[in-house]
Length: 335
Length: 304
Image: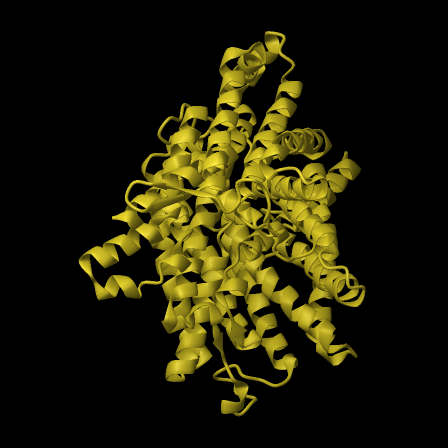
């Protein structure tokens, strides 16, 4: 009962926050009913997916302070598990998704055990290395389609297919990922007040002190890493059904791993709303910049230059992100 | 036999250039504990500098090194004072993502300016010439000259670090920045100098590499990861470590050739079926991971 109350308990946030959150949630629910372009719809789905990636990253990277730059490998495991099982054995999404999560979590335990003996820069680069090793293996592995990747052809199924998650209209995908999104928020809300959440924050503040208080630092990190992995792998499975055409190059690339970490940081790592704010700013910005400057004006790369400048500014000026700025203003008002 | 020997020779030669590239990373890391993700992009800029200088002046590509060194030195200094200085106040995650932003910036700037197609050099006195050593092992002259010049550049940096007053000041800053500041060493300028030397050595490596490796704006990330592996193996912050680790990693990148040798020698079918060439760089990443887990200090590391 205690745990259940914690899930729905947001009372430690100021009332104004909850009003804003409620309005945003209402907007997200009614968005498909408002007039919108299909491009806006696709951007919104991307935003919800990346919020979930960011929330997952935030558990280990934000609350735990372990900079993980290899999240895309789990996205790939989830996406390829779902795609392979659907194409080869016609396994529905709701069965293959838990299997994908289980595989990803197992893999995260295998590599997490040695990984978490490292700290700081060494850990961050080692996560990149593991991610690239897995990507290289997937690129030559014929069973998962090698470098060509896999394609789920929707004509074989009769959309709307709620078991296999094959739809013609994006609106179905939108509401399914929105459901996951709300569940994700509730889970992280519980997580941050759980025993593991408190242990993790003490590890972030001072690892030696945490150790001396009797916390099993290594095991706490590995457990949280598995939680973050489950988030990413789940959305990876959804990604396979939504995009329908997956390649190792765009589901497991380093840029994707960094984008996930970056969003959480831009919004404010280590806070509940941070990754959502980060995704809400960055994803629309990225896709509209690409649409306006890249595709229409024909300036290849200029969208990514602007994007890079934003990364450089946020890390040099306010590394605690947008949430950090909000808290700074609040503290100044109170004083 | 000749496949094995030529793979090893090719690995050692490319390893000498890779060592020079990693030298910049290890100096920057040693002096100020910051990981530079944009390192491969510095190399890419060095490659373009070598290429464009050689093409516009008609000089031999091997003579463009001073230009590349100056460009790299200035690039390092500008990056330090314009950007990296501000990252040092923040937490580690800001440093990682900040230099990643720098990498994206440089890569896409190059894409905008130079376009995305591969560019390579096809002229110069050494291009197309090769030596034959021993049992049918052929060594291209450009690779040999590039490796030789890389050793010279490495030696120059090593002398600078160990035999001059500035080098001693740099080492002091690396060992204990606060102590160095009390001794009257301008650590801010030393940091900038580390970025300058780091940038200069990596662009020289780029100008050497462009003699036999075509360049496009996306080459950077591969070399960043190779440089990380070399620095990890040699020990973060160690100059002689970078040299030996560079050669080892150079040989690791030639694993497909060595694999071929064993395939032919023992005539094994399953070995022939492994797509080794596509997995060429996987071994480098794997080596990084294994080294970090087994021996985080690296071979010659004094800092962890």
